[in-house]
Amino acid sequence: DQQVKQNSPSLSVQEGRISILNCDYTNSMFDYFLWYKKYPAEGPTFLISISSIKDKNEDGRFTVFLNKSAKHLSLHIVPSQPGDSAVYFCAAETSYDKVIFGPGTSLSVIP
Amino acid sequence: DGGITQSPKYLFRKEGQNVTLSCEQNLNHDAMYWYRQDPGQGLRLIYYSQIVNDFQKGDIAEGYSVSREKKESFPLTVTSAQKNPTAFYLCASKQRSGGAGANVLTFGAGSRLTVL
Image (tube, rainbow over all chains, first blue to last red; front, top):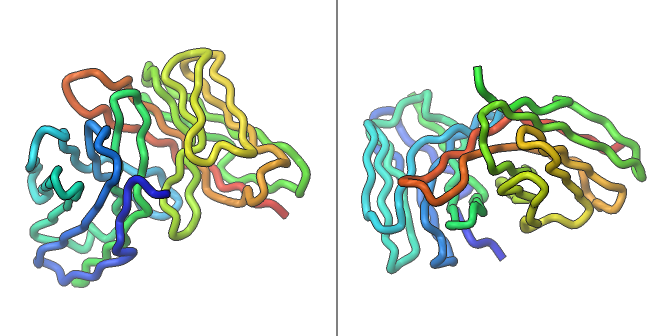
């Protein structure tokens, strides 16, 4: 039973437009939510995070929104660039160090 | 430079053999993790360790074993009991939770295991 879900396996967006990646979770015990970006045959790299007590966090072109009542978060990338093409993983962390990842969404930004 | 080193990068194993994947970090992180990646499955947690000489099972621990005798090392053994071991294995580390913010995982480059 997946505790962190990313229901869109893939997403294609035109360069310059907004990319919206979604994530749903089932466990209310998660303290933090993080987004990681991954290229093939490499380890994921951290992108942005949000505390469970916040509803928005912004870092440059990247913004993460958290709707705790709906157990839903989303990552917005504006404007999207071809270099953003990668697999994006949503992850959730508990206070006792357990970190669970979603299945990922493959983003393609078309020039 | 601080980081995580995984070895070997590629490994081939015959059915019925055990194999050990190495993970070493020089980041002075307390917590270490092993994940497995399969196509369409994302990263699934195998084992994690919050402190030396202690570790917890993740969601798919069956057929795997770990040890944490030193802070900087967290080797993963894939045993013959693992039914489908062919996958990409990722090791990661971070500071323990409880600080002022989320503690970011640092990942190694991964080890690809193929069972022949």
